[in-house]
Amino acid sequence: MWYKYRAKRGDGLTESGYMNAPNLVDAKKQLAAKFVAVLELSEQDKSGKAKDKPFRVAPDVVSGFFRRLATMLNAGLPLAQCLDYLANSESDPQLVGALEEIHTQVSSGQRFSMAMTMPAVRGIFSKVMVGLVQLGENTGALVDSLFRIAELCETQLRLRRAVISALTYPAFLFLAILAMGLFFTLVLAPGDASLFSSLGSELPGPTKMMISLSQKLRSPTWVIGVCGLVLLGYLMFVRRMRSDEAFQLRLHGIALRIPILGPLIVKTVSAQMLYVLACSLEVGMSTSDALKLAREVCTNLQFRKRFDLALADFREGTDLAESLQRYEVFPHLVITMIHMGLEVGSLELVLAKISVLYEEDVTSSLTAATQLAEPILLAFAGAMSAFLALATLLPIINVVNTI
Image (cartoon, rainbow, N blue to C red; front, side, top):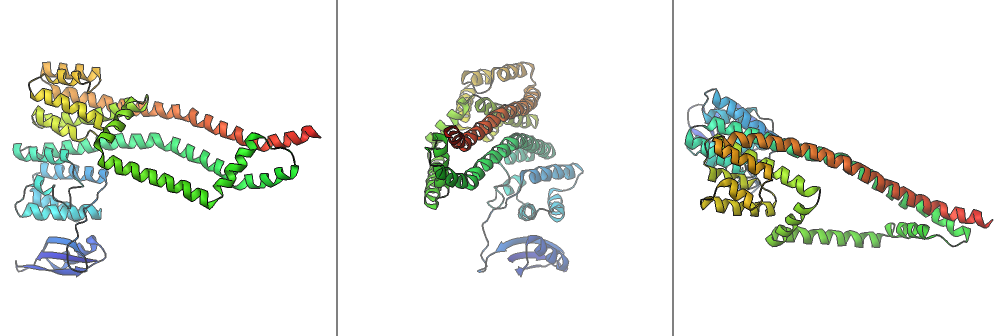
């Protein structure tokens, strides 16, 4: 793999060129052994043209980066030196490459917040992160902003892990039940079919259904046709989701009306938005700008639409709590707490407390939903086992009764 580099030699002059290395980390090590400092290092294709492939870094790695950077800045080290040290000490190759790009920009006089919006690293840092960093640079409270970003990342990670943890066991149980049914239908049913045909008697309905299903599942034409239709439907759905905003809005609205899923989505989105609001207000951001940042973490378009209407009302002079209540953005308890926070002048503290409570509520709701899913899946497994047992035993019982 080819890399273009620009490095500083021991005599103070800079040298540019191309080099071949297995990966970015090895290229950096080779340059570090030869030069005093690496000023620029970017991946090239065979024609020497730089690739535009953006860096991809896991959320937990990003969270750790912000916390380490905030700690080093709090100790009094310059930003460029912190970025260079972190680029040399990180183990994630993608983050190393991103930090090299950012360090080059910061060393040349670019602001950190602007360097975070470069095309190569834009996918790593959200608008919320960039906005908080920009505010920290403007107010001189960059360390506080970075700590808030790290806490925000950790909160989002906890919510994501809670969702994954809650869905893991039901998904595994469902796949196990499905695998058992497929094994019986594809492996055991064909042998039973030949046995039942030799009995000569009329086969019961469940047995006919099982044999018919087994024949279809063992037919390549039928399987390819069904899989093709499913894949086509999925591609059409994804294409419409990406291009038709009205369709997305309707779908997200339906999701909010589903009995168990809807309240869970509201709690999850509310927890994330309230925490962003709290972090933004704590570092000195205006309420209007903080609301704009909170909007960026809202993933449900129907929820975001209501929030946009409330935000427009607030900008026209309406009280924040009244605007949120008018369009039913947050639950009534949250609106009441926001009203109290505005009255006592400690809105950011109230929002932080509510977000923590909602995070705990999301975890407990996921646990309850998981507990509810277990008996449903077990009932499904019991019904499927009963059907397979009837399909297998009914012909035998009929033969015995005729003897």
